[in-house]
Image 1 (cartoon, rainbow, N blue to C red):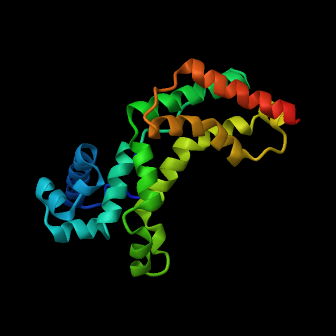
Image 2 (image 1 turned 90 degrees about the vertical axis):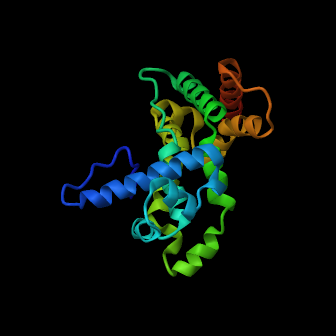
Length: 215
């Protein structure tokens, strides 16, 4: 994975092919364990055993098990959504929110990754042990950037448009993002019935109406 998703990264022709293969086997094993058993299943012993790679080799690729889990999460996080072309502000927001709702319901791995980054497993302690800059190891930076891109970038592109700026003005965009995505996340965490396109349209209409009233 490195500083970009494993699937997108092209192998450096100067890199030792054996190193490339061992890293790929480690990531394949870690990703399979994560998808099947969650973060607790991704142990150093389990990964090296499944990949048939020595522990010393694993530590040549990853500084810790935490970085390995981050790299595995990076393989499972869906790519950023593509915005519909030529649609108005309302249509773009409904399409994007509907897409987010489907992904959260069908493949909630990104929610798990968010919780893992926010609360587990001893990231602050590991950063302190690693010294200055330890909190921003490459694998953790890459995972954070993928999650930020998955959630924020499409909305940022919409809010940067002329129609959005004209309607929303100097709004708090972080609050706007929370107001739009909040119901989707709450519905999933509360194990309620998934929100479909009609519910997403209602969330967008309520949001736009409230913003217009404030203006």
